[in-house]
Length: 395
Image 1: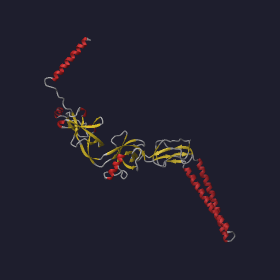
Image 2: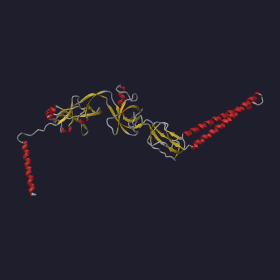
Image 3: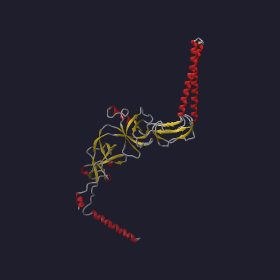
Image 4: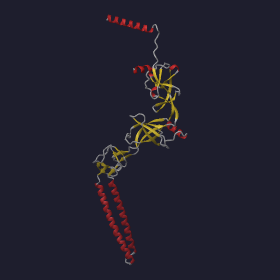
């Protein structure tokens, strides 16, 4: 133990001597300024977008319900598949309805026979009245009998139409093109009109994305429309951009088709819809989506790369180059993302040069840096190789 203490003491003494030697004689050594990538603030005309949270919805949704009672005989589709308009989906046992059609047609045949007999009796009475062999009262009675027989025939023909219609209702077809869900009733179960939900069909192309904007956004758009800066989405199909939960960059394009006629007093929001093409079935009703709606006309804006932004509690700030390449902190207010760069609403001047890569090397405002100028959209671009290094590499 005593030997170990002696070794530690000697080591500490040697370390102290080394440190004193490094700091003596030539004075304290200065560390070189860290290299950082910097870029000029970008100033250009942009169109700003407002972002909302939305949901994908079908343009048309149809609940398939039976129009006649009966036992379900068969299901003619694969659950979750695409179906075409007029495609047979369900069959109800139709024997009872076929019998009703046959009975109604037999009644029509009897009614036609009575009409034929009444017409013959009327013609006979008309001949007899000319020969004064019958009375006017009997002639009027024959005419009445014919009219009654014709009315009965019309009623029976209507009964045939109704029976045939009921028979057709036993074959349930898709009223639209779309995708069908699960069969809610299986063969052998009794179904009734209006109460039994058989399945749901939704259209897939085109499709809607619905979202809600708050009162401030609505008033902003209203003011812009009055000032001629941007047409109201009620009058024009303003462009929208959409991304799903697993996407970035808002790759899908659409157009506004609907803005509600009133705000929801409970939430203070107004509902809107945009239409999207969906030929590949990317969108499924119910999916969450992020929506960007054109929020302004063209205007000048300052833009920087997102990598330049640091956070101090609830404040956003960037470092810009000052005199002698000293860094200056500037608090900023950020806006939307445009073409991969972030709009700066407040805090920067067009002439500012911003540190966009190497911010972590700056430990305090005023620290000097060795700036390397790169494009604003390429913060990770490597610095050019020194001329001497290039010559050595060629040897």
